[in-house]
Amino acid sequence: MNGLSICMRLAVPAVSTLVLAACATTFTPAEITVYHGAPNNSQAVAYELGTQGRHLSSQHQLELQVPEGTRVCLSVLNAHTPGFTYSLAATVDSAPPTPPDFSNLIGLLTAVIPGASADATNRAVELIARSAPAAARVRAAPERLSPVDSVMKLYREPLQWLDQDIGTVKAAMRLSLSPETLLPMELRTASGENRGLAYAQQVIRERDASAGRFNDPNLAATIAGWKQAADAVAATDPTGTASEMAGVYHQRATALLAGRNAILDAYGKAPLTWRDCHAVTNGRTTLNLRAQARAKDDFNGQRDTGNVVQVIATSNYRRNVVEMVPLAFVAFPRNVTGFGIVNDTVREDVKYADNAAFRVGMMLTTSPLRFGPTNEWSFGPGIGTGVIGGDKKALSDFFLGGLVSWRDWLRLGGGYGVSLAPSRLINGAAVGKPLPLGQGREKLTDFIDNRRVGTWFLTFTVTSQLAITATFAALSF
Image (cartoon, rainbow, N blue to C red):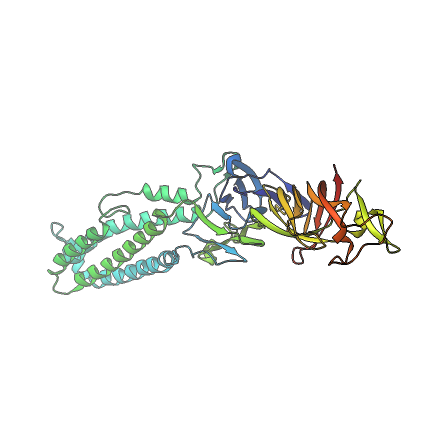
């Protein structure tokens, strides 16, 4: 078969399997679109069958019948790769590659940034307390700031803005873990909602891009500039307090920079969809689309985890385009008189079928038409001939016909051709007389002249391993 044949059925508990669509003939791979929803709401929302286009679905489990080697592809239309890992697990063949790991983002957002900020704040308060007398003296002369106050002024407001930007983005990231509303008829999710990965990316894009802000393309250089300016001011403080404070603030700025960069790497570059394929092998292949939260404590409950959608793919029965089928057959001529020996004399009214013997032959056949749930049935034309068996010579029987086959275990067919059948007695033999044996003639067939007659053949195969075929034939003139 030149094309691909796919039949999809629903598989729902307590509901019998229903065939949804006719088989497509020229399509590969099989495409399934999946919605990753809130708990118990994930589903396959559409499937594609070649030239028939997309068909809507709402199933958690699907059954496919596909030819061996077909690639079955699952695409998550609202994937959230920063928050969840996706994998397509199969009971056969090798597992797909592991998706990129963004787990370092969780650590940065939940540990590094808050820890660094708290530590920096505590140390800054301590340093401010230590420098309070000097600061009071400086405030008495407002026209000039102390080195400590200058460092504080240099860092305090920019870090507040950057910290606020990251806080806004983190809030959007948590909201984005909730799935968007599914619009199944349009094969997409709703837009403009404060949920889904696209929402988090929109919030990220909307952050300020000026110097020192979240989307500053040269934020690392900006922070380095802050440090350089702070060091210049701290050099005028003989107590060393300003220098130590500059180091604390720079540590905090560096931690915020690392968090900003991690967010951009994980969320800014994350694709809005996820797709993976698996080749179906011979037999039954179970594919499980799995989703796992990257941080169980924070991300559990927003979406389905574990097996999101299951696909059971059964490969169509594989059959060669052209087959040479061994068979055995025997002719049962109708309206053809046979010869036999009765009481040592030749009889003419003996049915030819009574003395016929099985012959082993071959049939060259093809199967352009295939049908059944897994294409295990086929029908096609063929040409057959006898090879050995009985008293006939090789290639003495020919017929053209067709075979209906179920796998290679059962074949049933018929055809029309020619076969040798008794015509007359020769070499001195006569009806009602004993055979004139001798001169190398020792059996009845030595005294029969055969002729070719038109023959109808009916064949069936019991097993392919033994190649046992019984063939019934009715002869006509």
